[in-house]
Image (cartoon, rainbow, N blue to C red; front, side):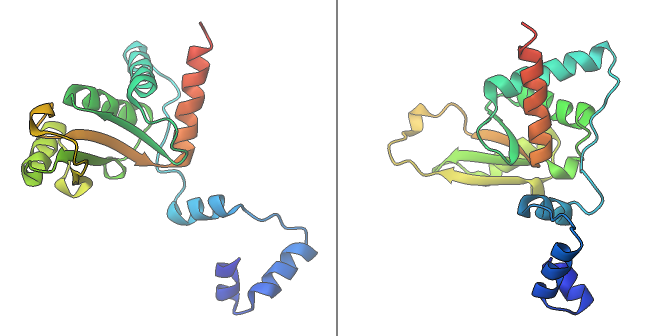
Length: 181
């Protein structure tokens, strides 16, 4: 409503009055933010008709998300792992089945504080074929961690797509798939 008031050069109260008078439904704050961030519609296109190989990729992506995903975050789809092959499969799922653009996928890498963050960024960029600008590397700050307990000098990587509608779709598909058994 604030944007409408600004464009119409009237007060917010006036716009509120119009909405009430004419019975115009208001969007929730969440929906308003979503439309503002995605003016051209959803930044993904779920593929509806799948061949056998794509169906296999859908199931693989859902199972990886079920096993390795961070499912409690309501606003984004996240999957973390040390194994780049798992991340590659999930990226393929996001791109081919969900229709996510490459620039919407972020990678967050947590490395042990004594390891070189630039080396970790270079590694993940090369192995996942992602631009370095989409890879955010930060140090693991837990003082109890010891260098000999680290599994990888390149850190643990978490793929992330910020879009609650995509997250909801994946959650629904996972639930539907699991309910078949």
